Length: 329
Image 1 (spheres, rainbow, N blue to C red):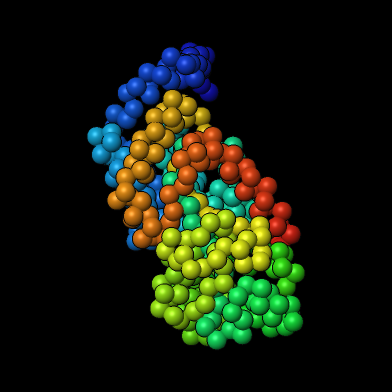
Image 2: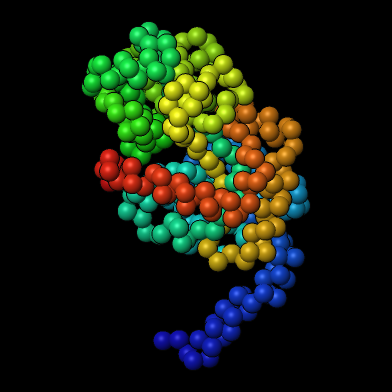
């Protein structure tokens, strides 16, 4: 058993760590050592590159190392557990995504509660999805696609990157929004699904620009619409869903910085200001575009804005995913 003295000391330290003056002092000195920058995927992917880009800029801004630590595994749950259980002092940061902070609580049984285990520190990128089809598909626009699917229920095949992946949820969303039905074909990732779309082995895929745009530019597939309110800079010829005849079918994924719940707001504000400063450089914006990502509007970059967006996304996607009974054991 702990002694009364040790308990009182712990309570005293807890009180100090939650006092405004202590938090302000910590923020003024932050960071004074290495910061661990947790990326929930293996090296080399888009999120890893994004994390290293932002981490490098934060290192330059603060003069302290922001070291990327790749923690893949269990559908990003491994990384999230590490961050959720870390000391809330600003020295452990996670690149969290739509998947980690919206979808995972529905498709997995988690040892942490997403809404109450993390503190938003700011949005760093967004990426809309495109509705694509094989080159030989017998429709040339979105209205034609929907009409064909309605006239041929259950005949089309739509690839996805596994249960709960953005292409999977996007396909379910499309069925709900259009009143159509088709066969869902799972793959080990978006890359293999795109390979089969190019080869004409499947009919459709709803995926990100980094997967779709290169094949579209090469003339190997069709893209009927982008699931956003505005057109994509890298493929301006593709209309928005609102323009193409399916208004409101918006699916924009995002990445943001998250810290353990209880991290002093002064540290969160300092971290956010540095991240926003890093993102405004034209070279950074260009690198984001090369990854198929977009720079969010400035009014969406605050911690409060990211927290509000997460709540809105949970309200939008959780009922749909639950109704589709999407689960991962």
